[in-house]
Image 1 (cartoon, helix red, strand yellow):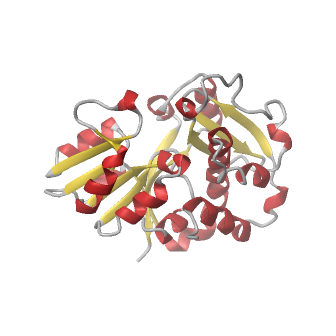
Image 2: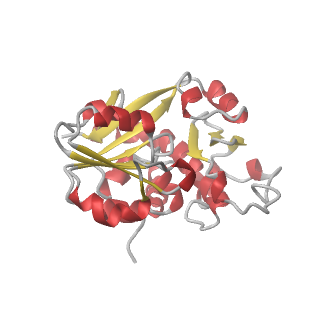
Image 3: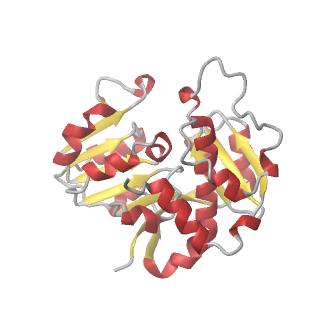
Length: 262
């Protein structure tokens, strides 16, 4: 069986982070927009909460509510391959936090700049597919690209200009540029999306949830990662607790683009 992005990142972190099993959790917040995990080291990881994926009859997000911070970071991160979406979101947020902790170790392998991922991609006159209806990103792409296909899984986020995500099998192989929302890591579609993108010139994972180790994502076919850097951790956690989404987070984070160092 092929190793998934999530399994690979978990394995990499266990070899990259000293005393990983000793790292504890200082704060966990599950907001309507994002879930945030803060480690004892102060590093924060985010993941889109995906509340629409939970059973409507569920009376609580986590069966371990009130006791989650008693787990170690590694124990919570090991929930990331789960097909219980509640556990998976918590696991991915923790993987993202641990990845931030380990990022300095890979600095010699990464080229890092601050800014919007769109500004670092050569999209002029090319066919682009965006997985996830990321409206500000799509607006910028349409100003330069020949054509932009937008795939969206959630019916609530689709409109007359978007396609269902099942169209990926048809449109991604015909695209020169592919941008994939980090939410695909959570819902388990990222591995197939990366396979479909193997003929593209540029393949980027994008968004606050795309915080896994970039080197792992590169091994699986990504050529760039457009993630975030947390500038004000207290503000980020406050925004999550108050139900804020991406627009509100922008006051406390910066965009960062990672590419392999040549």
